[in-house]
Length: 247
Image (cartoon, rainbow, N blue to C red; front, side, top):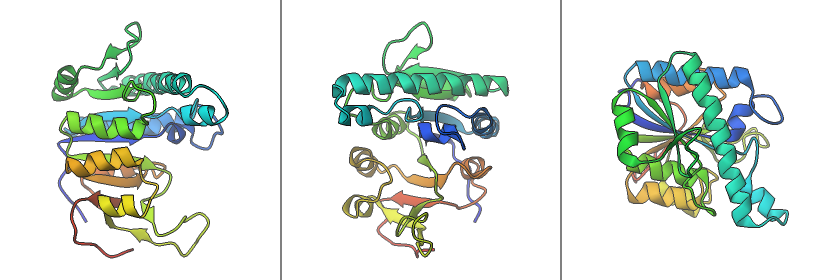
């Protein structure tokens, strides 16, 4: 089903998505493909914000579980997102895209401080804005940062990039008979504990009526097709109480 292209969108990309088939770090081919799809959407007129995770390098919550002080672990995780943001910036610039990295913690030598009005101005000028360092606070995930930044920049949709093409009735890797939901409400995601985003992020989207779409970023072309409204893929999560059929 073809729809209208988004005017302004925020894409949440996990750090793990940058690994491709690698076990750690950043896969250059995967990074280049994602950058090219973002560039093509930007050239088509979509104003793009990106929030990127750091789990391919450091996961703060995991370090905390192993005994590290949670605040220190989360600060390390924030720095990992800055590394990924700079890598994405480089990939975008190499494919001819205008881009700015804005950090929630001050690292003025390598990127700009996050200022909402400046971020919106970058978007209006056609620059892709990569938001790094989460919210700048420990105990909050980059999922929460994605919801917060999407609301702050008045995005029309939050695109949640995952390793599967939507939300399923069960783990599709372990259960071949699992079926995909075409649509869910935020309350269903919360009450049924679907692993879409953390509860804080979901509640923010629900309370500010921000639609979310969950899709597989590992599928070449999926990100661009969603941004340009060329194909109705993934799972839509919003406040619409009318349930659609499970696919």
